[in-house]
Amino acid sequence: MTSRILIADDDRDLAGLLADYLRHESYTVETVHDGASALERLASTNLPRPDLLILDVMMPGLDGLETLKELRGRHGLPVIMLSARGEPVDRVIGLELGADDYLAKPCLPRELLARVRARLRAPAPAINPEPIAVGGLHLDLLTRRARVDGRELELTGAEFALLQALASRRGQVVDKAVLTREGLGREIERFDRAVDVHISRLRRKLAEASPKAPGIDAVRGSGYQLIVVPPP
Image 1 (cartoon, rainbow, N blue to C red):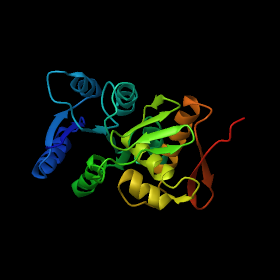
Image 2 (image 1 turned 60 degrees about the horizontal axis):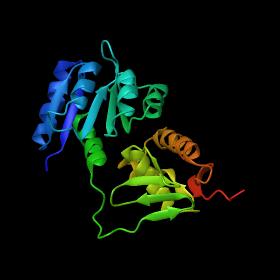
Image 3 (image 1 turned 135 degrees about the horizontal axis):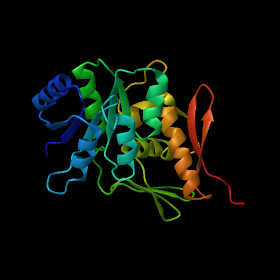
Protein backbone atom coordinates (compact mmCIF):
# COMPACT_ATOMS: atom_id res chain seq x y z
CA MET A 1 0.00 0.00 0.00
CA THR A 2 1.26 3.49 -0.86
CA SER A 3 2.04 5.62 2.18
CA ARG A 4 0.34 9.00 2.44
CA ILE A 5 2.34 12.06 3.42
CA LEU A 6 1.00 15.46 4.43
CA ILE A 7 3.34 18.46 4.02
CA ALA A 8 2.50 21.63 5.97
CA ASP A 9 4.71 24.50 4.84
CA ASP A 10 3.85 28.09 3.94
CA ASP A 11 6.64 28.13 1.34
CA ARG A 12 4.50 26.92 -1.56
CA ASP A 13 7.41 26.53 -3.95
CA LEU A 14 9.36 24.34 -1.52
CA ALA A 15 6.27 22.35 -0.56
CA GLY A 16 5.59 21.71 -4.24
CA LEU A 17 9.18 20.69 -4.90
CA LEU A 18 9.23 18.24 -1.99
CA ALA A 19 5.80 16.88 -2.93
CA ASP A 20 6.89 16.24 -6.52
CA TYR A 21 10.07 14.51 -5.33
CA LEU A 22 8.19 12.26 -2.91
CA ARG A 23 5.52 11.46 -5.49
CA HIS A 24 8.31 10.40 -7.84
CA GLU A 25 9.27 7.93 -5.09
CA SER A 26 5.72 6.52 -5.19
CA TYR A 27 4.30 8.29 -2.13
CA THR A 28 0.87 9.91 -2.14
CA VAL A 29 1.42 13.52 -1.06
CA GLU A 30 -0.87 16.38 -0.05
CA THR A 31 0.18 19.91 0.83
CA VAL A 32 -1.31 22.56 3.11
CA HIS A 33 0.20 25.91 3.99
CA ASP A 34 -0.63 26.66 7.61
CA GLY A 35 -1.01 24.85 10.90
CA ALA A 36 -4.79 25.19 11.14
CA SER A 37 -5.20 23.51 7.75
CA ALA A 38 -2.90 20.68 8.83
CA LEU A 39 -4.99 20.03 11.96
CA GLU A 40 -8.20 20.22 9.93
CA ARG A 41 -6.88 17.69 7.42
CA LEU A 42 -5.78 15.32 10.18
CA ALA A 43 -9.20 15.58 11.81
CA SER A 44 -11.02 14.77 8.56
CA THR A 45 -12.94 11.50 8.55
CA ASN A 46 -13.86 11.79 4.87
CA LEU A 47 -10.35 11.27 3.51
CA PRO A 48 -7.71 8.57 4.13
CA ARG A 49 -5.51 9.33 7.12
CA PRO A 50 -1.95 10.51 6.36
CA ASP A 51 0.79 8.16 7.55
CA LEU A 52 3.34 10.92 8.19
CA LEU A 53 3.43 14.69 8.58
CA ILE A 54 6.26 16.94 7.38
CA LEU A 55 5.76 20.11 9.40
CA ASP A 56 7.44 23.49 8.95
CA VAL A 57 8.15 25.49 12.11
CA MET A 58 7.82 29.03 10.73
CA MET A 59 4.25 29.43 9.48
CA PRO A 60 1.78 32.31 9.81
CA GLY A 61 -0.96 32.04 12.39
CA LEU A 62 -0.59 28.70 14.14
CA ASP A 63 3.11 27.93 13.77
CA GLY A 64 4.65 24.48 13.57
CA LEU A 65 5.46 24.14 17.27
CA GLU A 66 1.94 25.15 18.31
CA THR A 67 0.51 22.80 15.69
CA LEU A 68 2.66 19.95 16.99
CA LYS A 69 1.53 20.59 20.55
CA GLU A 70 -2.11 20.49 19.43
CA LEU A 71 -1.86 17.35 17.33
CA ARG A 72 0.20 15.31 19.80
CA GLY A 73 -2.78 15.16 22.13
CA ARG A 74 -4.87 13.54 19.39
CA HIS A 75 -2.61 11.92 16.81
CA GLY A 76 0.32 9.52 17.07
CA LEU A 77 1.46 9.73 13.46
CA PRO A 78 5.19 10.30 12.80
CA VAL A 79 6.19 13.97 12.47
CA ILE A 80 9.33 15.30 10.80
CA MET A 81 9.89 19.00 11.45
CA LEU A 82 11.56 21.40 9.04
CA SER A 83 12.89 24.79 10.03
CA ALA A 84 15.20 27.52 8.83
CA ARG A 85 15.96 27.92 12.53
CA GLY A 86 18.44 25.09 12.74
CA GLU A 87 19.88 25.97 16.15
CA PRO A 88 20.20 23.03 18.57
CA VAL A 89 17.76 24.62 21.02
CA ASP A 90 15.07 24.79 18.33
CA ARG A 91 15.60 21.13 17.50
CA VAL A 92 15.32 20.19 21.17
CA ILE A 93 12.06 22.11 21.58
CA GLY A 94 10.55 20.34 18.59
CA LEU A 95 11.64 16.93 19.85
CA GLU A 96 10.40 17.68 23.37
CA LEU A 97 6.98 18.51 21.96
CA GLY A 98 6.85 15.10 20.29
CA ALA A 99 8.46 15.40 16.87
CA ASP A 100 10.07 12.16 15.70
CA ASP A 101 12.83 13.86 13.75
CA TYR A 102 14.01 17.33 12.75
CA LEU A 103 15.75 18.71 9.68
CA ALA A 104 17.14 22.20 9.17
CA LYS A 105 16.35 24.13 5.99
CA PRO A 106 17.59 24.10 3.37
CA CYS A 107 17.65 20.32 3.26
CA LEU A 108 18.35 18.02 0.38
CA PRO A 109 15.21 16.22 -0.84
CA ARG A 110 17.25 13.02 -0.80
CA GLU A 111 18.02 13.48 2.89
CA LEU A 112 14.37 14.14 3.67
CA LEU A 113 13.45 11.01 1.70
CA ALA A 114 15.83 8.97 3.86
CA ARG A 115 14.18 10.32 7.03
CA VAL A 116 10.71 9.63 5.62
CA ARG A 117 11.66 6.06 4.76
CA ALA A 118 13.11 5.55 8.22
CA ARG A 119 9.95 6.74 9.94
CA LEU A 120 7.63 4.73 7.67
CA ARG A 121 9.72 1.60 7.52
CA ALA A 122 7.73 -1.37 8.74
CA PRO A 123 9.21 -3.44 11.55
CA ALA A 124 11.11 -6.52 10.43
CA PRO A 125 8.56 -9.25 9.72
CA ALA A 126 8.23 -11.93 12.34
CA ILE A 127 5.80 -14.76 12.96
CA ASN A 128 4.03 -14.23 16.28
CA PRO A 129 6.87 -12.17 17.81
CA GLU A 130 7.24 -12.76 21.51
CA PRO A 131 6.22 -9.80 23.69
CA ILE A 132 8.88 -8.25 25.88
CA ALA A 133 8.24 -7.97 29.62
CA VAL A 134 10.55 -6.05 31.95
CA GLY A 135 9.26 -5.51 35.46
CA GLY A 136 5.82 -3.94 35.07
CA LEU A 137 6.51 -3.02 31.44
CA HIS A 138 4.95 -5.05 28.63
CA LEU A 139 5.73 -4.46 24.95
CA ASP A 140 3.55 -6.05 22.28
CA LEU A 141 5.76 -6.09 19.19
CA LEU A 142 2.96 -7.19 16.88
CA THR A 143 0.66 -4.25 17.65
CA ARG A 144 3.52 -1.95 18.79
CA ARG A 145 1.72 -1.08 22.00
CA ALA A 146 3.33 -0.57 25.40
CA ARG A 147 1.73 -0.98 28.83
CA VAL A 148 2.89 -0.52 32.39
CA ASP A 149 0.83 -2.42 34.99
CA GLY A 150 -1.96 -2.63 32.43
CA ARG A 151 -1.90 1.11 31.72
CA GLU A 152 -1.20 1.93 28.09
CA LEU A 153 1.61 4.32 27.29
CA GLU A 154 0.98 6.90 24.59
CA LEU A 155 4.24 6.67 22.63
CA THR A 156 5.39 8.03 19.30
CA GLY A 157 6.86 5.56 16.83
CA ALA A 158 10.39 6.70 17.68
CA GLU A 159 9.76 6.36 21.40
CA PHE A 160 8.42 2.82 21.02
CA ALA A 161 11.39 1.82 18.86
CA LEU A 162 13.85 3.21 21.41
CA LEU A 163 12.05 1.51 24.28
CA GLN A 164 12.09 -1.77 22.36
CA ALA A 165 15.84 -1.41 21.72
CA LEU A 166 16.47 -0.86 25.43
CA ALA A 167 14.02 -3.51 26.68
CA SER A 168 15.42 -6.19 24.39
CA ARG A 169 18.83 -5.56 26.01
CA ARG A 170 17.58 -5.03 29.55
CA GLY A 171 20.39 -4.29 31.98
CA GLN A 172 22.88 -3.71 29.17
CA VAL A 173 24.29 -0.34 28.20
CA VAL A 174 23.12 0.48 24.67
CA ASP A 175 25.31 2.89 22.73
CA LYS A 176 23.68 6.10 21.46
CA ALA A 177 24.77 5.27 17.93
CA VAL A 178 22.87 1.96 18.14
CA LEU A 179 19.81 3.68 19.61
CA THR A 180 19.85 6.30 16.85
CA ARG A 181 20.07 3.59 14.22
CA GLU A 182 17.36 1.35 15.69
CA GLY A 183 15.11 4.02 17.15
CA LEU A 184 15.34 6.77 14.53
CA GLY A 185 16.35 4.74 11.49
CA ARG A 186 19.44 6.80 10.68
CA GLU A 187 23.07 7.22 11.66
CA ILE A 188 24.01 9.48 14.55
CA GLU A 189 25.22 12.97 13.65
CA ARG A 190 27.69 15.31 15.29
CA PHE A 191 26.17 17.06 18.33
CA ASP A 192 23.04 14.91 17.84
CA ARG A 193 20.74 15.16 20.86
CA ALA A 194 17.65 13.52 19.39
CA VAL A 195 18.04 10.29 21.37
CA ASP A 196 18.63 12.23 24.61
CA VAL A 197 15.40 14.19 24.17
CA HIS A 198 13.36 11.09 23.28
CA ILE A 199 14.80 9.25 26.29
CA SER A 200 13.87 12.17 28.55
CA ARG A 201 10.28 11.95 27.32
CA LEU A 202 10.27 8.17 27.81
CA ARG A 203 11.52 8.52 31.38
CA ARG A 204 8.75 10.95 32.19
CA LYS A 205 6.04 8.79 30.62
CA LEU A 206 7.24 5.66 32.41
CA ALA A 207 7.47 7.42 35.76
CA GLU A 208 4.01 8.95 35.38
CA ALA A 209 2.49 5.60 34.41
CA SER A 210 3.54 3.62 37.48
CA PRO A 211 6.14 3.49 40.26
CA LYS A 212 6.74 -0.11 39.11
CA ALA A 213 7.87 1.02 35.67
CA PRO A 214 11.50 0.33 34.74
CA GLY A 215 13.90 3.25 34.84
CA ILE A 216 16.36 4.40 32.21
CA ASP A 217 19.88 5.18 33.39
CA ALA A 218 22.37 7.26 31.48
CA VAL A 219 25.92 5.94 31.40
CA ARG A 220 28.17 8.90 30.71
CA GLY A 221 30.09 8.58 27.48
CA SER A 222 28.41 5.27 26.62
CA GLY A 223 24.65 5.35 26.27
CA TYR A 224 21.55 4.22 28.19
CA GLN A 225 20.30 1.12 29.93
CA LEU A 226 16.87 -0.04 31.07
CA ILE A 227 16.79 -1.08 34.73
CA VAL A 228 14.07 -2.67 36.82
CA VAL A 229 13.13 -0.60 39.85
CA PRO A 230 13.13 -2.92 42.90
CA PRO A 231 9.84 -3.05 44.84
CA PRO A 232 9.76 -0.96 48.05
